[in-house]
Amino acid sequence: MTAIRLDGVATAAVIKDELKTRVDALRECGIRPGLATLLVGSDPASVSYVTGKHRDSAEIGVESIKVELPESASMADVEAAIADLNSAPEVTGYIVQLPLPTGLDEHRTLELMDPAKDADGLHPFNLGKLVLGVDGEIDTPLPCTPNGVIELLRRYEVPIAGKHVTVIGRGLTVGRPLGLLLTRKGIDATVTLTHSRTPDIAAEVRRADIVVAAVGVPGLVKADWVKPGAAVVDVGIARVGTTESGRAKLAGDVAPEVWDTAGWVSPVPGGVGLLTRAMLLENVVSAAERL
Ligand SMILES: Nc1nc(=O)c2c([nH]1)NC[C@@H]1CN(c3ccc(C(=O)N[C@@H](CCC(=O)O)C(=O)O)cc3)C=[N+]21
Image 1: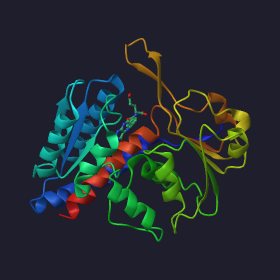
Image 2: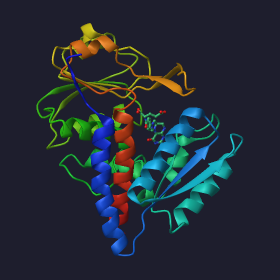
Image 3: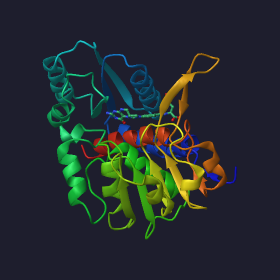
Image 4: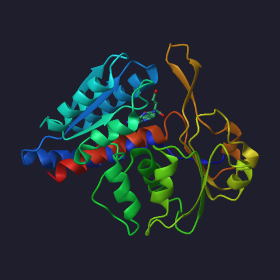
């Protein structure tokens, strides 16, 4: 193990400390930030993520509100729940946990949210602001996982400007918005966005100074794909069994041998997932500061 560990637990703790100070200041002004989660169905991974989000909120003094609908909920049920969240004054930000059960329209759901309360940064208006905001800071929420990836790299002083980043995965929550963020002025990376139809992903990864893997295939990224000294950020998270204590055993996209080649690696668990949650709270606190 030669690589430096990009420690999500420690980094998220520092960020949450900073956020707590901002929440305290808001409370002084009589503003109480509140995060709601809308969970449809009971997929175990989704339940676990949502639980983590409520735990983090409590740690920094953000109220949290849990809304749950059964697996059998109709689109009309989901739309009604969103209308309620849009008008609830105690909810200053919220998320609709994805993926929704099959048959429910995720894009329509995101469109119905109040963009000012969009804690995930996935509303089309906010994604549009991200596309338009080439020049740097924008006053709309950013997608949490991409923002978390950049925050983790920055806090470990991994050089990004002028570097070549290869992203594996083009999904809505990670790959697509991450390419937009990394190429903004001030961040200034050059990005190769690869996906399942890319002919030779290994070759694209080999030229990268920074690799971000967001696929969900355990061990996909092999040691001989990685340029020596590169930073490897593992966003993949797959459930690969249960531990002796009955908890889910998690595996990322990065093979363990990569730690011998890379300069930095983020682990799973204990890496980007925690930053995703911290950036969610960052969006909630920033939205409350704009009230
Ligand atoms: N609307 C929406 N927003 C999301 O941000 C969103 C989503 N839907 N759907 C699913 C993905 C996935 N995601 C994770 C969040 C936390 C961890 C996390 O905390 N991981 C811990 C372990 C968690 C565990 O033990 O299961 C870790 O990596 O150490 C992981 C993954 C957010 N997502």
